[in-house]
Amino acid sequence: MFSVLLVANVLSAQNGNLEAGIEHVVPFKLFKTKKDTLKAQTLSRIDYHNIEKFGKTDPTYIYLAQLDFEGFEPLIKRDDNDWVLNIGYLNRANLFYWNGGAFDSITMGSFELNSNFTGKFSFGGEQLIDGRYLYLKFSKLNSRQNLEKGQFVFYGQGLENYREEHISKLSAKTISYGYLLWGAVFVGVVISLIFYRTYRQPEYIYYSLYAVSLAIFLGRNGLGWYEKYIGNFSFSTFLLNNTFELLAGLFYVLFEKYFLDTQKQYPLLDKAINVSIAIFIVWLVVDTSVILMGKYQLHFVLLDIRALLLSVLVLFGVIYLLVNLRNQLNWFIITGSIIFALGSLLVYVSGDGNYLRLAAVAEITVFSLGLGYKVRVENREKISIEREISVTYLRLLRSQLNPHFVFNALGSIQHLIIRGEQSDAIYYLSNFSKLMRYVLESSNQQNVLLSEEISFLEKYVLLESLRFDMEFNFSIETDDSLVPEMVEVPLLLIQPFVENAIVHGLLPKKNGECYLKIHFKMVDSEILQCVVDDNGIGRMESQAQKVGRRSHKSYGISIVEKRLNALRQTGDQRQTVIIEDKFDMEGNSMGTKVTLNLFLNSISNF
Image (cartoon, rainbow, N blue to C red; front, side, top):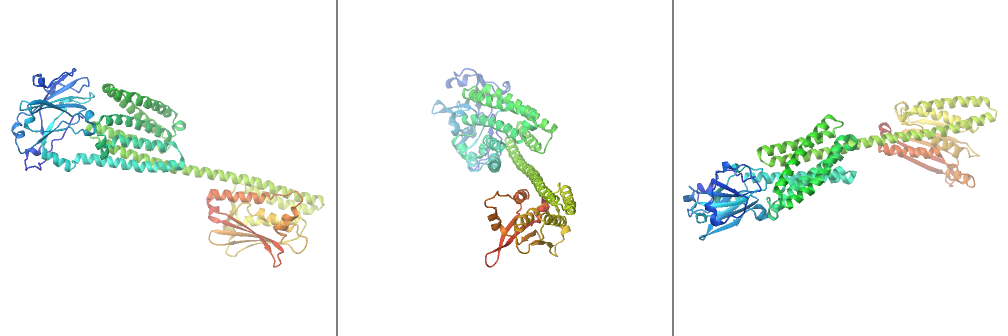
């Protein structure tokens, strides 16, 4: 901005001088030329004009301002005050003054002084040329500023000292907003990097890069070291502003691309973003080269074109997402973009850059919330998908279990028919049909009532006893505190252990009474315990009998174990199977005891 300074009625801290504590506006006239051949000796002979004849700044011209202190001479020539001239922010500038009977000059341009730039010159009455003038030669890099609105002010050294000791309200606001922006960026970037470490999705990286680029572009005034070593108005800052503004735009569209998954969800918007990415990259290279070559007028033409293109892109993106509102993620991009656009508009209207800093803080916060919301949604979808996969897997396991049981049952019928036991075969077939009906009717169920499972086990054990033409005692008991009609258990989970006890424990036993006991009881309010107890030959003897012959793998037990693992993965709950070998005092096998602990919460939730 062309040194637009507020006139503040601040009392001077020096000698109580009221006039020295006030900013005085210095009238001036202008002269412009394209030839830099001005000499100090000819300054007073140039034909200066009122500023009304001049429009906006033109970087092809060199301007010479005649600062006229007429009327202020008595005030300035007083011995009780030194004075400070504030010319504001000018890219290139030289001030001419009278020094010991000769013309002298001092460099005051921001691009020339960089971090040493202040825009201020301390003077007294003896520095005025012809007793009333100071001359300022300057140039502006763009054609955006109106010379008629330019002001130069001077005030007492006491006011300058006061300002150095006490930060002005405007500066305090700018610094505080800068720190606020950096704080928001820090929190957002930390959260984003944590998410990236977990999910490895590119939108978290692009969000972080966008936030940091935006903070460097808008938050420099909050960094004291930056002003000290680089300068807020230096050429380096001018170049960095352009670079990080373009980088912020580039990372913004990349963030939007991956955040909304535009390639799948919004193909037309994705094409527009891809074109924008290419434009940003080319523009960054070209515009940076233009600045380094000193073609500032061309740079500002490119800047105007860029602002127009960005406005069109943002407007298109917001309208497109509003029309194609497929999920709630759209609202985060729409809200953030509108907030930043409003901040830019307020800066354009008011000239106060703090509006854009506040808009950046709000936008970064909205995008952070959007990333958190996306994580929540994706986690829900992931859990739902994993649950569906687990359900499908369990159904597949049951489809493996059913043929296994059918094969054994049909083998039993065949065994009875071969032996000519028609009545037993018919009885067996009748019970088998009831079992198959039970299995088929419950094929789409995850769980069944315990009473139904007990009924199934009774029929199964009875049919197995007929199949092997043997007699053994069996019982199925429940605790008095347990109501089988009110408890659910996983379908066909217990049957493989019962089959294993009969086939590998009781059937090979040659002597003595055989029994099989199945007992259900509640261990606590969450665990239903099922104990399958037999007095067969035991696992060690069963394994010994298999030596030298083809080993038979118990597919039923294996499938149950897989089912329990699948249940654990789905419901994130534990399922426990404990198999114990029983021995007498002499070390002889007394059978096997299998304990299944079923967590009812896991079953019901599943």
